[in-house]
Length: 321
Ligand code: TYM
Image 1 (cartoon, rainbow, N blue to C red):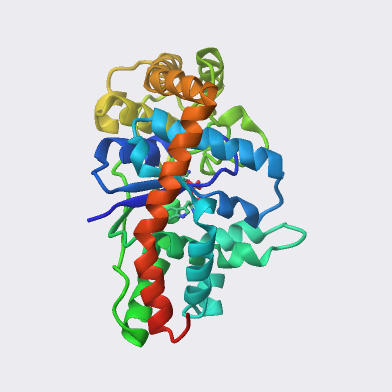
Image 2 (cartoon, rainbow, N blue to C red):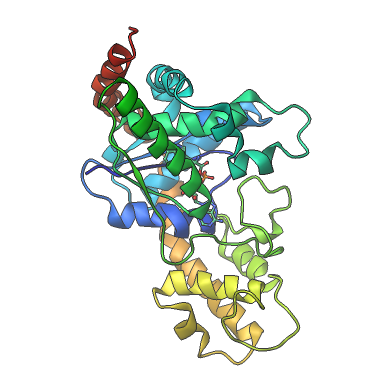
């Protein structure tokens, strides 16, 4: 049973990506799983091409540095012909209403001058990523679960309309850190593309910077060190981050602290230690251009080969190709 998941280079990877996704991919990965940098997804909003290329490279290094086997990673655009073709097939199995209902589309299209058509159809591209490789499980944070649901519907619909070819995938979300919040605004999720990065801890941030960001995290004036997500969302976010770093339930980790300051120091220490090996390995890899190029090329060949028969079966069943 194959697991597959991706990360979009719309900015630097942060602690939410790490705890909610990347770390799980590394820990629970099995031979045959695939994890990739979804660079085509970064084109759905205004972006800078040179920065995109650089971020894709950085994220590939982060995936490997986090402990994912080098033979399980690839970059999505290296398969642009295959996923592009399958996206078209699946777009023709998807209704406009289904795509327009996606929460992320509604949120991201708000306040944008030009809403790119790709922003609407991007969950279909995501379905193509998943279905091309025959993935059964898709480990993601909460925010992506709706997109995996769409992939399930499209797989089922194609299979019943044209013939069995796709595995029907399932989203797998983590028990904690499924939705890490912005430290400066616990009302919103931590995001790579946030303009003000004061509340976003990036996985490659230096320890001093991590400590400063955690110390400045918004809490409340209640002065009660407890785990109450509804009443104290900022504090609960810090507790959840600590909980995910030390591997104990939130209510257990919160018990030992008497002040917010004390808790924040413990969170900073835990995050710094959690990220230290990743940062060190990533910078070594980023300095070794030839090694990263080799990993990328081998990944592209493997993933292309693996998806080829599913694409040709889907085209044949759909009466084209
Ligand atoms: P992306 O790049 O937004 O996020 C990558 C992974 O990190 C998780 N995540 C979070 N988890 C906890 N707290 C947060 N604040 C947080 N922010 C992000 C996401 O849920 C995700 O698991 N469209 C996808 C990438 C993608 C993909 C795919 C995933 C493309 N094709 C196929 C799975 C299967 C995305 O933009 O993720």
